[in-house]
Image (tube, rainbow, N blue to C red; front, side, top):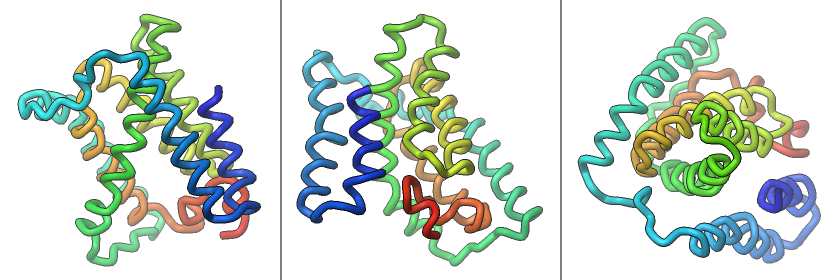
Length: 200
């Protein structure tokens, strides 16, 4: 709750009503720093950060079907809605977004999924809880909330089987950029959340 309320407070109030240094300090100290602090305090080892190639491939193999299905659905949606807007910069945008994907996967998996596992041992319920909180952060953008819930659910489910953040970040970054090119901008409102959603 502390993390969710901090992010919502940042998005809904600080982002538009405070000085840049206040926003930066709040974002990095509380929104990003707080979950990192909790993870550091509660975990003795971090297998999710393993650079083991076999673990990366194992996780990538598990998330591959979801990533390919998501890519196909998104491109199909773009064709049907005449929303495809490819500018030839996919790999550049993907490489730029991958770090942000990695940060989000840390929060989604190590922070949310691991805590949801304390509530229930059912992996589907765990993924539902993590995905719901992840989706709420993207309120009030309905298209983005739906996409983040679906992605969050399957990434969390994969993480419980094969915990590797790098492979999940590849899937996350790939699908995020694909959605940017496939879904009509008027549906996504420029990926904006909070009050900025209505100013698109």
